[in-house]
Image (cartoon, rainbow, N blue to C red; front, side, top):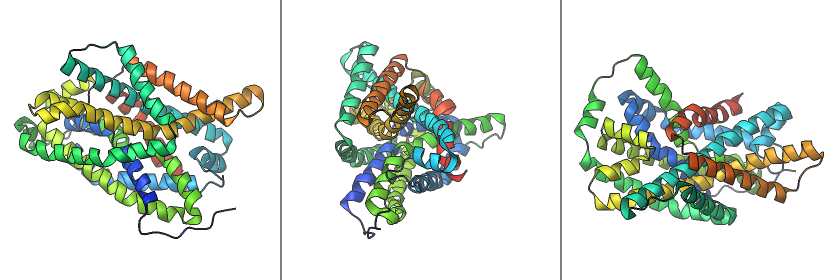
Length: 383
């Protein structure tokens, strides 16, 4: 039986929690790597991103949220909606791809945070820490925060959103005075429409999808709205999502333009090769003490926040796989508590191994995570 529709409020404290959670999940590692790929792709990429940022963000996420709350399950998820519309076999395939996608994103955040912390220790304290030990500490701290509970995790994410947004805006304004002439010349030069331009635009698309995406938390958000607001869930979702996405797009676009205009092409190439965020590249270039001191800590905070937001969807997907495997092996469903901790342990081990191995982040985004997010976000709800 469906809940009685809740009255649509002008705004509420409950809205604030999810407004911050959506913004917090979207602005993370993707945002900090996007200027690097965008700067290497040229002016046409800038124009394409300006035209597609808001529609790329709002409508696909709203469609996915609608898809999830249309499920008849008491606590709707992406898996329950897919099983209802496409059957259990397709649902299991989609759940595997969903889990793989966001498990890789968790790994990207873990490795990126480890890289940033390592860079900070070397630069300021001349400490060349053991990477396995550093990765273990980073992954452990992130998991401890998540295990403190959903409400506490969301509150921590919410508390970090406004300071992060203010920091990115202030940094963007500061970088206007530190524009690099060679970077400006690169973007004012008429583009050559050839195969390399098409290749650059094609490689940018997955990074854009990743940078503006907060798909992992949509399932949790949609389920909360269905449970709290009943048949009025969609109207409440729209009311929360619209201002959140406007802020996401405005902050990211302004930040990206400022960073790209402040870094030359060789510096962007070096950042890509070194597997570091754009904040680290800016901090290394400019002799602004406050940027040098804060670039790495802010990058860690931004990625940690997105890690926590992404973890909700990842844990849900891994738990579904664990429960399905247990049911096939034993013939009975495993207890939810047991499957929850098994899934967390699996995520911990995989993200730790990934962080130690440290593959190139932009390559992983371009080849795997970006296309898989596009599949879930753009194709599944409309198929």
